[in-house]
Amino acid sequence: MTSLCRDCLTVKNEDFDRCGPCGGHRIVSHDALATLGIAHVDCDAFYASVEKRDNPALRNVPLIVGGGTRGVVTTCCYMARLYGVRSAMPMFKALKLCPEAVVVPPDFSRYSEAGRAIRGLMDTLTPLVQPVSIDEAYLDLSGTGRLHGVPPAASLARLALEVEKQVGVTVSIGLSSNKFLAKTASELDKPRGFAVLAPEEAEAFLADKPAGFLHGVGPKFAGSLAKDGFHTVGDIQLAELKDLIRRYGETGEWLKKCAHGRDNRKVSPHDDRKSVSSETTFSEDTADLALLEDHLWRLSVKTADRAKAEGVVAAVVTLKLKTADFKPVTRRISLHAPTQLAQEVFRTARPLLAKEAGGRVKYRLIGVGLSGLSPFHLSFHSDGTDLIDPKVAKRAAAERASDKARAKFGRDAVITGRAAKMARDRQTD
Image (cartoon, rainbow, N blue to C red; front, side):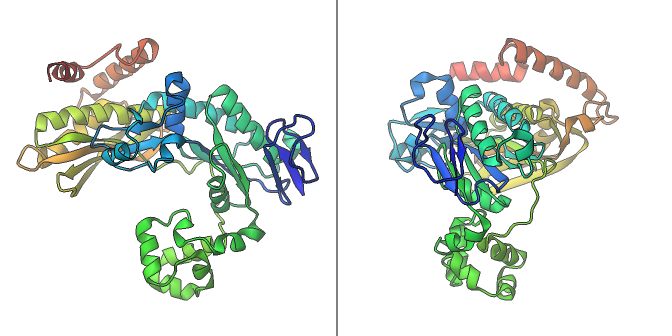
């Protein structure tokens, strides 16, 4: 048995409940603690944690980060979760469950800054860091014990302390032998947790869990599994692989592997995220094209800012709409050259919007997304000339200059004519 004090990083080959050197109680003990090297690190209620960090008045209140009364919950703090509030829940339902909650809109520039700081700390441990999103990543620390002088578990515990000290948010850690089990473990001891799940104990641990416990099995799929007689992970473990493949295709093979805790995927720094996007839900349904265009511009800026923060350009722009009766409408178009510029995102999505809006159909939601991502420094033509639109380079230069001014003097240092008009309209409403 190996034990680790998460407060002072003392490691001993024995089981203990209290740390002798520091008196701490945050002890993690496991037979395989000194040998496992694949980790999943997940920030706890990340957006809400950043908001509480930056505004002390919010620290002891239930906090929701998200849209207006008809929007959805982006995330919420653990206090709000005690009332039943959850991510992706309609805002009206969340406020009904927790009327005293404080609601703040998301500020992705601050979240990106915190995410980059955390990523920098991860990079000091191992070059094998695979980001999953702005607030979570897989790390492969196999073989780093000799480099750091401590087993991977101790390096991860030190990382958690450094994130709290330098960034001001907390993380939960799952440690195992593969990505699936590491992800599963990281969900077991939130917030500020550290859980270990060895491969030899995975089958027994998973057997009595509902099928929906498997990461990647959503409510709909869990319902389908239940109808077919697969209520628990143990039911899937006992099933024949051929039967699962016959029922669910390739997903059946994936299910079988997960049920037994098997996962041969490598931690790859090059498995980047597939898209960036932003959307908003209106307080009232609208068919007003001008209003929809105003929102499209604002979302184009927000999405472009995310792409710039993550250092990527996109080859595809997607427009997302949802009608008043919840019917989704999705339109996408490939670009002549990849971009991360708000002007180009807006100019590409605007004609798609014009084809769908301006008539009798009212919409409750609009969004814009970028996909077909690649690193910005590898895309030499993202700000270049375009024979179809010769002014693209001039607009690009203006936007880059605007970005520098906003970074130095604040987000409102430079605003476009459309943004100024939107601000005036809000004042007159």
